[in-house]
Amino acid sequence: GTAPNGCPVSPQAAEFDPFENAYQLDPAEALRWSRDQEPVFYSPKLGYWVVSRYADVKAIFRDNRIFSPSIALEKITPVSQAAQDTLKRYGYAMHRTLVNEDEPAHMERRRALMKSFELEELAHHEPMVRRLTRAYLDRLIDQGEADLVDEMLWEIPLTVALHFLGVPEEDMDTLREYSIAHTVNTWGRPSPEEQVAVADSVGRFWQYAGKVLEKMRQDPSGHGWMKYAIRRQRELPEVVTDSYLHSMMMAGIVAAHETTAHASANMLRLLLESREVWEDVCANPSLIPNAVEECLRLSGSVAAWRRIATADAWIGDTFIPKGAKLLIVSASANHDERHFENPDVLDIYRDNTTDHLTFGYGSHQCMGKNLARMEMRIFLEEFTRRLPHMELAPDQTFTFVPNTSFRGPEHLWVRWDPSRNPERHDA
Ligand code: HEM
Image (cartoon, rainbow, N blue to C red; front, side, top):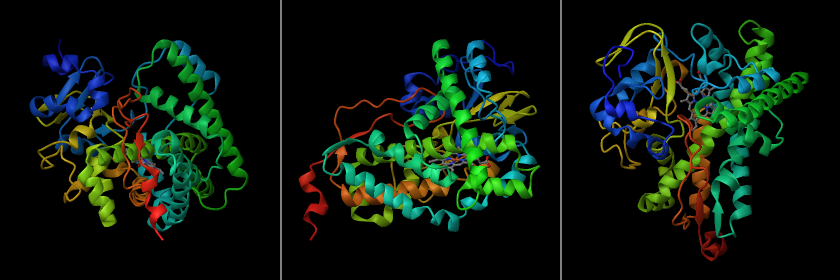
């Protein structure tokens, strides 16, 4: 076959399938060949150009004029008419949010809505994150084993996300179903039957977001990003529009929740798989912030992001025609030996860890990164203090919801001997 730039498609490029096991289990490893031999290639199975090296991925993130983020939330698998009809029945109209907005509208909105992400504002949420983490740990501390995803790591980031947005905590299980549906809808490859069920959940998620927004409009005072956005709408109605608020409500829950839940599960798995590092961190909590960052590099929760070329362009030595869709694989970039020494090693003393691209880069870089880091830091502080002797349950196979972008294990079983819990021995 031939790629849209006229070059032949290599056998490895022809075979590449991000919905298959290799990429799901370890996207960086699945693209090692590409980093080495063909750092930009056209994937006929996906219909996207795949970019795997650090310098290229970063350059694409940096230039959001030539490489527009407008397709960031587009369905990666074209959906059936039946699924589209289902979405239509719910009046689904997810439109622009920050993450897929072009300039100049994007920067105007980003600036208008930035305040809630500043460190002083985030400080309001810290005691709540601490309290929640302790309460969830109290519930499982004497069990001796737990699935940390089901029993804690999914719900706390969801609760924090709702607090951050200013949404009353309701119906967590429904929201869990909704957000998985959104992931599959956006980055997955559902079968035609699944597509209708997924569309149904996404449609209900959309309506739910609309209802919450209406309720919030009645009293938009107090902390919470959405409340702040509603207040900003009064000052800047043409910048913060109604359609924008509704999309932001739904996208905000997903952006803040699943990303952080997955990142936390990836982090604990990675540290427990590297026992010496785990023990170092338990012995010296000042290592925690760097450990968090290194885990975000080595096993981030956003494996790949998307851009579309608005003009003919070169990426390294590869010519890309206007209209080309790009899958820029940050998970691969983060393992690029051209930028990170011994890239596959978990090294919490690394001095350039924060160069990782898990939060993207440039003008769209994740606004919630410090909230996510705070949650992950607090999880690690509490786990290393209260369950330093916990270990991964042996013989578990990790499973992932097949998709290109959001990555974290569906379950994470750990075990420990409760009689060794430090708090039973501390005077
Ligand atoms: C954008 C990752 C947590 C809110 C992004 C982008 C990525 C990302 C890859 C796109 C960046 C780009 O295009 O350059 C992550 C990861 C997280 C996380 C890995 C957790 C570990 C959060 C949280 C929030 C949040 C907790 C909200 C409270 C946003 C927003 C944007 C964004 C609003 C859009 C920014 C813009 O386009 O200007 N995030 N995110 N994220 N994220 Fe996050």
